[in-house]
Image (cartoon, rainbow, N blue to C red):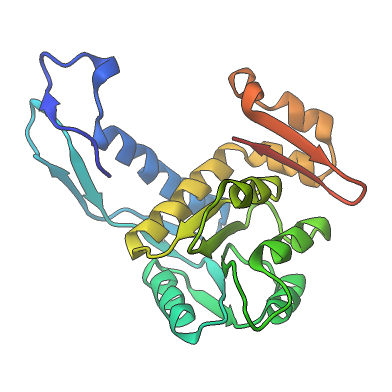
Length: 239
């Protein structure tokens, strides 16, 4: 986590960019993520390094470990090399089981019969007649993807139109190529923290109790919130 070092005495609170403050929020999200999948979920932050590690200097950088256990993942990518890398990265994050699929149709069948905690999907499939975005739209439309599942799209482009289209499908995050394992980890935990804080809203939407879902939205978030409804599905996403 990157912030900005500054002397503690002369720096007012509103002007601080305290990396440790942000890191502690993320650490709490690790615990919350494990509790969400109780009793089998496990989440541990076992190592923390604070820089410059001085009692009168605002931390400018914090490095900490994250160990998640008993979560499941699915990697959807037509390229065997990039698919293998993603599988390895997710396992390094502590996922107990990571399945993989090279084709859209195969992935849909897996998602139809099994629920995953994390799905990482490539946007482009040259050998298929569909895209990762079309898969996500189909899953939402058919009610096959719980809102608790983190869905991350991997792509080499992120134009405004693509991002807007993904937002309508409640995509959790874009992961732009080239990326690092640390960036993937960051995206997952940002999504998990967001889903934890909006859990009651997601549950209301999945129960088609849209009035209760709207009532649960914080007033300060209403200007950036949308309820999207159609004959077959309804999505609630707060930006």
